[in-house]
Length: 329
Image (cartoon, rainbow, N blue to C red; front, top):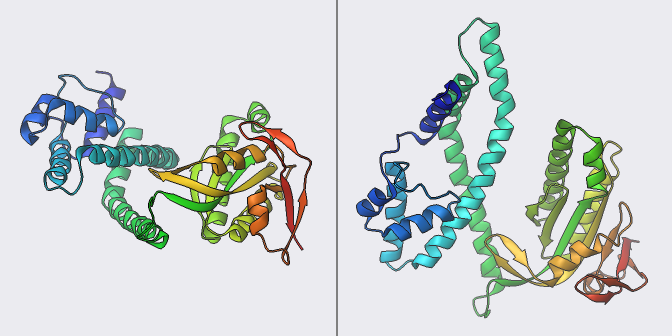
């Protein structure tokens, strides 16, 4: 084992808090699960099969036991357990990558500080120290944020009404904001500058969306997909994104498309024609302009907004569409 591999193993065990002692068969035997069930849950978390390797900890076995207990007492069925596990896995995978990328610079600072003070150490040592100081506080923060978002999501479902046939379907205005000519930009900028640009774009968009009581559904690097139940607030969100991104001379131009209609929500994502149309409309929009569909234009009060139909044009997947340019009086 190389020094780097040894340091990585040390760091992994420090984060997990225990050594792996079980194989997949051991986990199945200890929890009463079949090997297929244990493997299905492990894959749902986003990890590859480990064969007969002793790659699992007591915490892994406890997690399987917890999920199977929920299935056995009738709270959920096994397919629901897999769906929830996949949701957690995908969310936490992105969070972990984001956290490591954010903290990498701090780890380097700590390692350089140790060296300047004549303290023996390495990046791995600095990382271990940082992990020890952050694990408990950040773990508590995760539970707090999860409860906050769970409460907000439950309130949204309740607002749809208990008599609704499908609580996964809701009427919203979907917004899609993207950076103009992002590919050309990436060919001109160095990696650090590209990373900074994307981070600023995503964080500023998230602030604007939250300020208008909307939700960011996903960030795609050069684009942000958001929703709002109020089309006026969705327009104000689009206008706000143009203000903080497109009108900042240090940032690239943006285009925003808005479309209103029914969407289906699944695992934190949204699907349906309004999502696709909002994305397509950005190709129609001029730089730092907002383009909407007819359904959104109809919901914007005429005493507050001026709507100007644009020439009809073919839009992939929708046939001929007449987009609408809107602005406040």
